[in-house]
Amino acid sequence: MSYIVGVGLLLLVFVGIPLQYAAGKPAFAAIIGPIHGLLYIVYLATAFDLARRPLPLLAHRGDGRAGFIRSWPSSSSTRSCAAEGREAVGVAVARPAPDHVVD
Image (cartoon, rainbow, N blue to C red; front, top):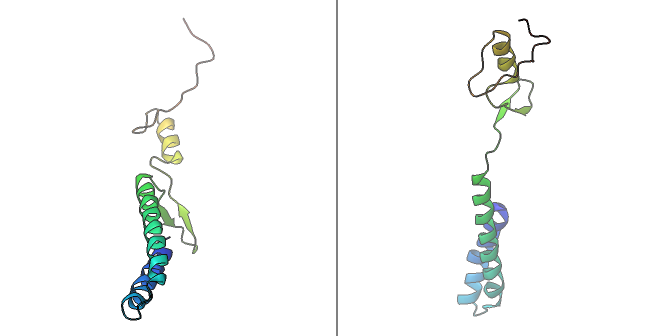
């Protein structure tokens, strides 16, 4: 989206404005100007929407590919905490109900 808006701005500044003032032909700037303005508003709305969303972080796997980082705590740390009988920070560990109750 930024490339499209940038190309529109370059066309407007380096083609449309010189044609309007040097050659006396304002038609190109009159067409490209509002299109660039509309695309810029869409670009700003898209950037604002993306800034509000939490995006997953990318991590290098070591094999040349990127992968998504699991949010902390990972399932392995949750399993190790559950095995030790304690809860991980911010994660409730589900414990199975006892099969029978001893009185």
